[in-house]
Image (cartoon, rainbow, N blue to C red; front, side, top):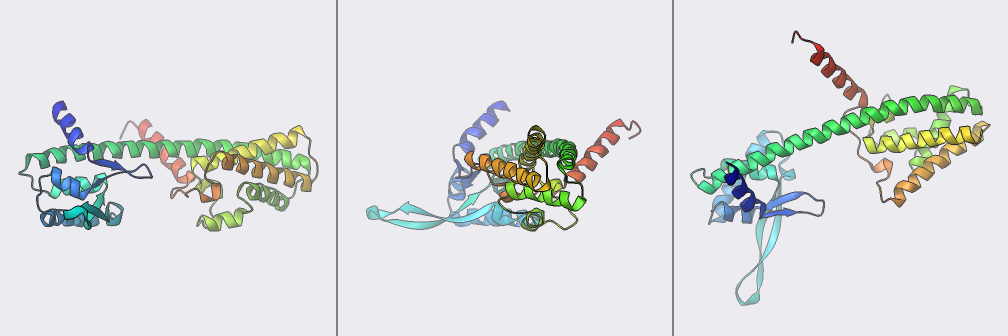
Length: 282
């Protein structure tokens, strides 16, 4: 079995390509040769079946099958363009499942792409699980630091809830290039009732955590007094964090993707897991 997997890896990995976004793909023309299809028309029929299977699973076909043109050499040094298709690993998996299984190489392809697809799914699940846990941990830490920030803001003279909302907004404006809470929600497609911090990925949450902790420390260290001064400190700290992200070549927080799942939903899932793990009757 190990020898078969090594052989599979050699023949199918050798024609694997990596694009500018570090994503792997295969060219259909090259895969057709490996799978011993001598006529492109016959292989196209297999691809069409694979596309149908993809569509039947409610998966966007264009994300896995991308039509491209390829230049080939012909007589007298001339070139002409031929049709080709960029395939994802999942597309290749569907193709080998619909190919002529009487061919030994097709059976090898089925083993290889099934193994690799399952392996990638496990990696993706682990990465998503890790990201969810990071979001939950940072969000909880940020909640604690926001309590401390509210306390020091009150010491600086910000006692009215409306004044505190302005204070918080100034921090966002510094970090988000002038965008306040309302504009951030609009940009990220959030509802009015949504809490911004609950719909941030771990990277964005970390930037906001740094903003909150550094503002807290600066207000305490310099014993800042007065609403205006406290607001300006929060803005400047936010802007400094933004400048640091820019200098490091990072993505600005307003351009980071918005997770579909809220931190509250993650928290409920984690609590359910703990409950189920502790319930010996299930």
